[in-house]
Length: 204
Ligand code: CO
Image 1 (tube, rainbow, N blue to C red):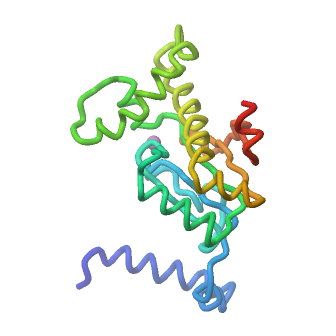
Image 2: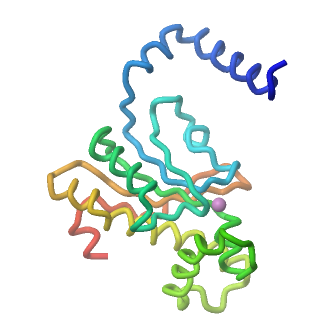
């Protein structure tokens, strides 16, 4: 018997379901991908990119890590952005955070969690840079606000990559958005931080 048979059973049922309504779906998709969107989100199992915006395979290019962080020197994330922008020519990059993010909470608490604390130093930096905006808030409100502010900081980081800067310089139609998702209600919120040019980035 196959290991994790139930997952293979679910896969067969899922693929059958799609083929029932669209027999050509997978054969067409196998020939090319042309997504318009790059999603940069949290690894949290409750924040699945395609399902949240109800889009099928082929529509979103995805990068996820703990607390949706875009680090200037992270070759993994930079490679994803590079491929999405230069090869796939996506028109939109969305950084999608979520309320109640465990990574943001761990950074805020200063709890000790081992290796991941090094990664979370990036969130601690965001907290320190924005300490005035967080002052006087209850723990709950502070976590919500830091989750939002973290998204905005990561949007800035995406915009400051050489990849996005060069795309704009070359006249690409490319916007970077900041979104946040409610794991308690399934609703996405736009943080109104959309940036579509170097001028917009500099005038913030
Ligand atoms: Co999270």
